[in-house]
Length: 339
Image (cartoon, rainbow, N blue to C red):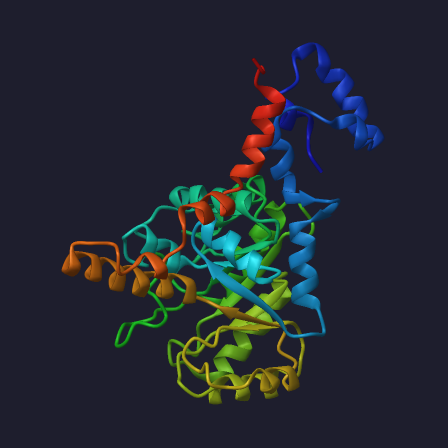
């Protein structure tokens, strides 16, 4: 629930006592305030349903759910328009679009800025790839508060060491965190959250590190007991043998999220039968955009003309539509003096 301090941007000292009374009474209609961004981001409430609640329902749903990678406001908007009910704010994708490596070279405050634009651009919940929580338990619990401030619905944290190493890199050491320490980090994040529906997804990297299914099971048990909403079990093999073995031993003790970037040929019906909760399409939008930009810029450079590409790219009008310029026009008609 919002606190009186949340309204400092719109309430004078004389109105604070009145606001406190309204907050205690639980009245929503009387709390309308002109601070547009503050009101919109309060746990990202849309039509009375928190984004965090929407994401939690997806994670706990008996049906297989899907969320799509995004890395910017416009890619989040596009994913929502395509029909996706949730967004994966990929660490790899956000780092790539910033032109840096996925090794925590972008600071967590820079990631927060990207997330703020993403959340403002879409109405569906965002699960952020929060790497290791950007440090120890103290960094991670502070991160939770800042994510909540921006309306982000949940954070996926992985049990590796800071700075992180991307899981899909070949031949790189993938050192893992101590199980107890990471479980306590999850507990600290849970204790720090103000929104009871904020989601913490514990990403187990035991299979990535080559430590085997037994280790993955041990870690998943500990993290679920620590308060994680769901377990993300990661593998970079081209066949889902490890994931299948884990799921068989897991026996549906809690929601499981998978990221089939490398084992993408496995039919989705297979995961439905295995009672997987959610599939993340983890980096495909940024990969598509990189390929498109490479092809486009090479062609323009070669031909010294845009004649050959105009029918392959979005119109300027489409950019205006996606960024909701029509809303600005209506607002100008309402709020600017008419001559």
